[in-house]
Image 1 (cartoon, helix red, strand yellow):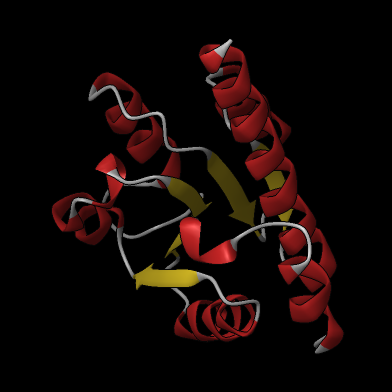
Image 2 (cartoon, rainbow, N blue to C red):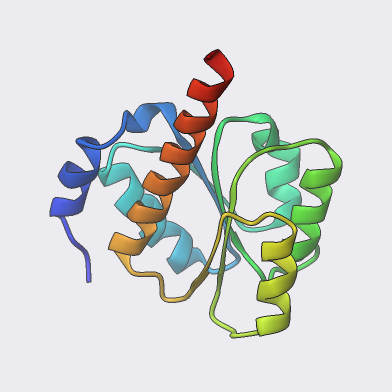
Length: 146
């Protein structure tokens, strides 16, 4: 189910070109669907099949939002979160998984994940999460200026 009106709805709320969206998921269908939806909402989107691809891209030093699958070949999502934290990255991470695991959910949330979503992710929820993260970032920036 794809809400074509959401891109227009979301464009009213934020300057989407200022927000890079990074998607790390080993499922090519998930990557393509998310990329298509977010590009319709006028975001800059980069997709990666593995955590290692993302790390080598330099995306961790960018401003944006990282949508990260928990279960990945090679380095898993939780390990990527640890590596990003160790490198000083402040990139907000939204975890996605098709496998419910309360222990993993608690672990990544305790380490600062912005959200934890169950797949399949509803399009409206996806855009609302980005909006909330953008609002938090704007609030932090305005507090830094004062």
